[in-house]
Length: 125
Image (cartoon, rainbow, N blue to C red; front, side):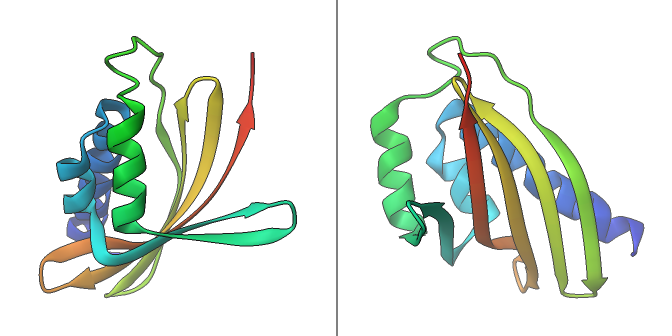
C-alpha cells in the first residue's frame, strides 16, 4: 500500500469525521462520491439511503458540535486491496448513538471517495 494512498484515505476519513461532527454537508460531499449510498439493517430488512437524502437528514438534525456532544472518532482498520480500492472500519459517535461504519473507497479522477457506507449503532445512556 503506497504511503501516499494511505495518507490520502486518512485525509478523506478526517474530512468525514469533521463533517459528521459539525453537521457540514459540504465536507461530507467532498468525502462521499455523488452516487454513494448508506446501508443498515432495521428489523431484518436492509435499508438503502442515497447520499442526498442523508444530507437532508444531516442538515435537519443540527450538529453534534453545536449541541456540545462529545466527539470521539477513530480508524479501526484500513485495508487497500489494489491501487483503486480500499475499505475502512471506523468508530464515531453522536451521543447517545455510537456507530461502527464500514466505508468502501474507490480512487476516482477526483481522488479517493467513499462510495458506500454500511453501519450499525448502539444507543448508550
